Amino acid sequence: MKEERIAISADHGGFGLKEDIKRFLKEDGYNCIDLGTDSEDSVDYPDYGVKIAHAILNGEVDRGILICGTGIGMSIVVNRFSGIRGALCHDVYTARMSREHNNSNVLILGGRVIGKGLAMEIVRTWIKTKFAGGRHQRRLDKIEEIIKR
Ligand code: RB5
Image (tube, rainbow, N blue to C red):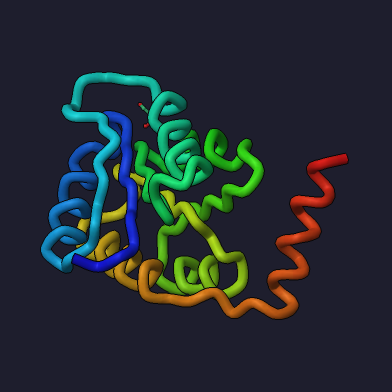
């Protein structure tokens, strides 16, 4: 199994895509930790967004993937946490740049927005792309400084 631990979580709007991504990650040898939800029954997305933020900030996992209907609710929730850099991506270019420039540690997808094929390409790209560092790290440090004030 690969060393990196990736948590995944979704509300009912993202449940189906979560199951597909989980299967894909496990088949590819990733240590994928499923933090729910477990069905298409209606739940509240903040409860699941918070789980991913806490898992990363507590050091239980390295990165996370979050899915709701549009990805917007999850994006709003997870980006309230200092140290979390959530990127809502609906194309491969954005997913790549969110890693290279923003060092995103949470990938957010809209389960009702994109199809399975595109979602898998996005996940694959996001997982494999490395952070470029340098001037991009300075900008990320600035964000943390600004929100402390
Ligand atoms: C649930 O119906 C839907 O509101 C949720 O999945 C998400 O899209 C919210 O942003």
